[in-house]
Length: 312
Image (tube, rainbow, N blue to C red; front, top):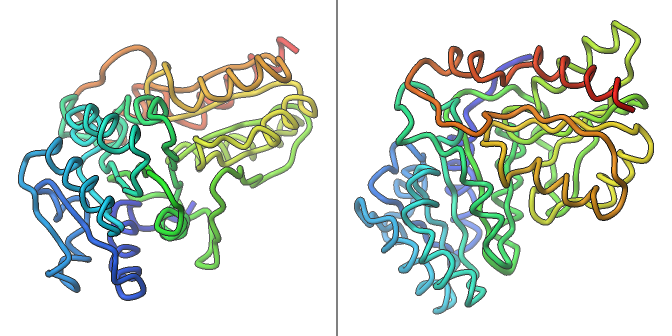
């Protein structure tokens, strides 16, 4: 697959583009704008950009205050810092009050690479999904990220967007439109459904292609809208294919897999397999080495698909 820009870079580009259309939009960062790419907005609209320093909790509180005054704030930092350090403020100042504030956690998952465990946001989706009223989005490529940022800006209410550090495979064209609460079927199939978010969408498509060569028909769903989840698409997939594999660069607890499992338990129980980091922290290493070591590859998706089909 052709590699495109990192989703974090597309995030910064989307902010800069939207800034011209939305004068009420402001951007905050916790002294990492060169990494989160929010610097692209700062370069065009310096009077509407606020560097809050290494004070993530305070940044969330300020974003809440700006939202309460009618602004549309986008606050960014590494996923591990934004969610873990700012969770109390996200809960009480944003979620509880239903503020129209948007947040982006970049450098998510083990695919961040050499920066190590302290900066690998592998539990961010789980934590974000527990915030009442929050929309949680995980775009898979640069085009979907730009569309997701636009959708988030127009959505009334709090939003968490997950972005990655490495270059992401191109899945969509520039014409991509993003609809919150909708899954996107990238490939139809009848034997198993491969559901994925973010960087695991590419390996899932590769897995489907390899499975097809073995006579196994795999449906692929891009679950970029983790919350709200597309319940209809999930239930339909379970009923029509009878087996589900969920893949994510995230711990096994509380993320996309948990959202899908909860939905199926209540509506259409089906055998499931999961491809994720597991119940563990990772380590320092190259992105490629960590992805391979923690099983976030098409090879693992293929193996999971065969296991779950055998349980049908």
